[in-house]
Image (cartoon, rainbow, N blue to C red; front, side):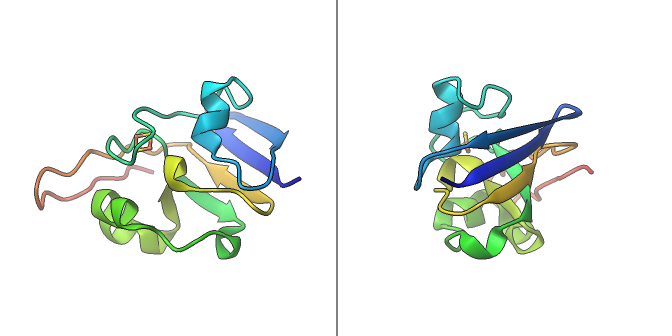
Length: 111
Ligand code: FES
């Protein structure tokens, strides 16, 4: 089973998850209660994380991630709700603030 390491709100959480798990679904079922998320559908950006380790084992960013995060996907930012986990991964939601783009407006990520 893959292990997820999540850095959020000054704490680190480690959790084993089932293969092909979606972390937002796990958060909703209280297996990862500290994970920040909102819509679960790639529309709000509240679940944005930066992948610290394990990015190479993820599928390429999908169109929702590219639309919502823009060039930040090239810096390792992903929408957690769009990820399925098959191998160990380390992600951070520390100091991330992303605004939902309004038709071509710039994305702001503070860090
Ligand atoms: S939870 Fe809304 S974009 Fe991921």
